[in-house]
Image 1: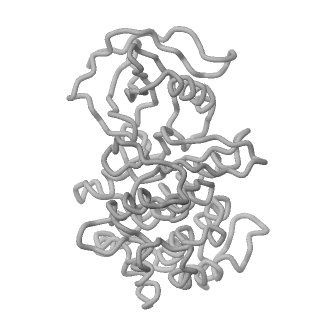
Image 2: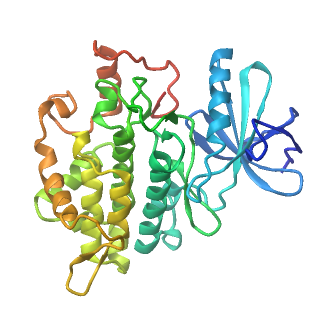
Image 3: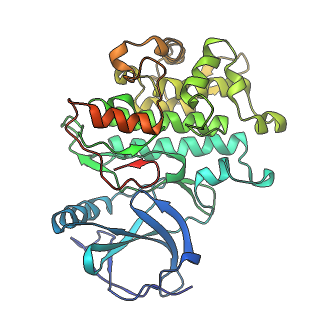
Length: 376
């Protein structure tokens, strides 16, 4: 493994915690690729001194885009939370290439431990709940815990990384945008990943804290069920879980591999699935806040089956409201649903592209470069 060299200089004021690395031959090799972000490949590297890092190389087409991105990096680098992947530094290279250096996450991405692992590597129910708590805590920090509000805009399993102690950290802030808390946080550029995008992101293309909540809700459903948001030949994950809720078979959405192993509480499974369904409500104002989502995940059932909340003042009616919204969201107003013949909440990738392309009310455009199923 080729070392990446010494850091030199800082960005911004003393104590910012971001290092600017010197230009050099980085020795990128396909054998060191450990993942694919929304903007490019991610490589494993080693800094002088033996520190392992994840290195992301991206390209920006114009100098204005580069200046804006560097300004954002200088702020995002100040985000410090145990459930966010830390940005260690950056290096600007020739021809619009930029190198971002992150903490290395030894246990890889969450999607590999949910969808592409052997039985011995499968996450238990307790481990999955811990992952969801970690991610919820990280998103809550982005929304409410920093000096400005940060929208992640691409919450999904492949953007959740697991460190050596199996703590989950939210990464890939390539789509993130910052807003002052008093501002109405919405943007009109269409970004995100098919299957995790809230309806209002496509029509009329507005991102907000509620769209992050929607992405988190989809993540909850896939972590519990072991199913991807969209699979060819199957209904969307959101529609499938909602139908099970309507027929009284909600627990059947639990990953069948976990059902064979056991070690889960049925009431907790149903509560977490209800949480996911409320978070993916087609109507943004019916979704929970991330603060409420954290409280639901931290709640425990007592011996009588009642819910106990660790924080005083938690609404007793929250679980009932979750169930009500989860069961009625499929009958939401037509304008809150995808404009695709009322066939379901989640369309296919091609349908989303066609909808965006033909929408007269949408001021945003789709980039001509589509990386996988990511719209940027």
